[in-house]
Structure formats: structure tokens, C-alpha cells
Length: 104
Length: 178
Image (cartoon, rainbow over all chains, first blue to last red; front, top):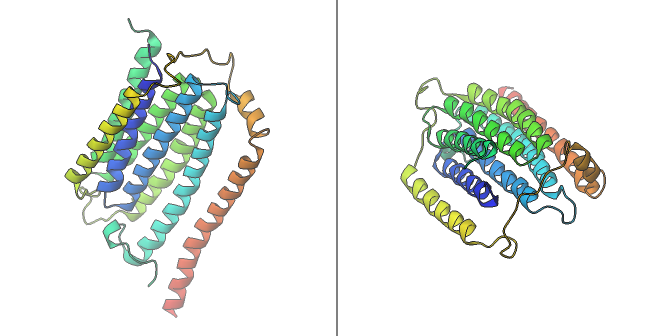
């Protein structure tokens, strides 16, 4: 029988892999992908708790929070990629180690 | 003694974790992007198993159809032609693996040793008969109306911010060219 802990462990592994991506990559876009993985792990946790501990105060609270996470992830991806593009236009690289200025 | 739903859970969990591992450890960033797509689809499958059908659809539409395409565009427009095969170099991988292993052990120990909800055995409750769209809509336009409106303003602000960031840069280039 699949219970709450199964989903929590999957989300924990997903979160750790996202963390590993964020701390070990040099490409800023890859770092952004790691952040998306971590956000998805949090989202999965919310939905799992919503499924296995429902009913207070409304039956859909966890799923609503997940929806907001997806909305904020979309906004974050748009702004982050705009910053990466602006940075790329100046420095001709997306290496995080070279990122120290958005000015000429 | 596994039911089909349990087998599906293990299938989706394996797909998600294996794809996320490729995202974290792959050497070609294009492979990472495409496996991120598979990982998001696996999470959408887990959402379906958790009776969150609308959320699974939103996950596929927004993440796979929107964010991933955006990231793919960004990767292809900023890739260095010089080193196409090592486009996703990792630094400090062993330190990162150490940090990840420590965090994973801590998290899993925490999850397995906690008595969720006061020690009561957590039983899956039957989900709604049809879809979750009805309940989600009632919640979003009911108790969550204010966060809903704030989220729409945040989206507008992010859109304007993204446009201004890119446009400001273009103007800066023009000024430097004069």
C-alpha cells in the first residue's frame, strides 16, 4: 500500500537532485533547471499532504498552494531567463563564475 | 501483493528520479533539458495518482509546454559553439554529492521517523468522484480570492520586468554604439 511516506521520500530525492544541480553547475540555465526541480519537489509534497490529510479547513488547500507554486515558478523562469539573456549579451557567456556585473 | 496503482506509483517514481538524476549529472545540457521534460511529466503522473487531475494538466501545460520551451530557447541561443559536448560542466561535483547525500539522509530519516498526524496510521481517503476542477474553482474565487489576485499582479510584474530587462539592455547597446 502506497502511503504518504512513499511520496515524501520521492519528493526528498527530487529536492536533493535539484540541490545537487544548483550547487554543482556552472551554466546559469542549468542552475535554473535545478531550482525548477526543487520547486516541483515542494509542489509534490503539498499535493501528497492534501491527499492523505485532507479536510482542514477546505479539501483543496494543498492543491491551491501547488497551483501558486507553478504560477510563481513561471514568473521566476521568465525573469531569470531575461536576466541571463541580458548577461549573455554583455559577456558572451552564461558561466555563473563569470557573473559579477550586468553593466558594461 | 501490489495493486496496479502501486505499480504505477513505482513506475512514475522511477521515471521521475532517473530523469532528475540525468538532469543533475548529465554532461550535455540539451540532454539535461529533455530529461527535465521527462521528470516533469513523471511528476504529473504522480499528481494523477494523488487524485489531482487538474494540477497534472496544469503541470503538463505550464511546465512542459511553457517553461521547458523557454529554457530550451535560452539554451540554444546561449550555447557556446566552442565546446558543444561539454556544455554543462560541473564544478565541485564531489563536494556537491557529499552535501546532497547528507541532505538526503537527513530528510529520509526525518520522514521515516516522524509520526505523521499524531501517530495515527495515514489512510488514503477516496478522492472526489469526478474532477477537482469544481472544488479548486470554488476555493480560488472564494477563500483564496486575494492570493489569486496578487498572483495575477505578480505575473504582470514579471512580464513587465522581463521586457524591461531585455529592452534596457538593447538601449544600452545603442548608446554605446553612438
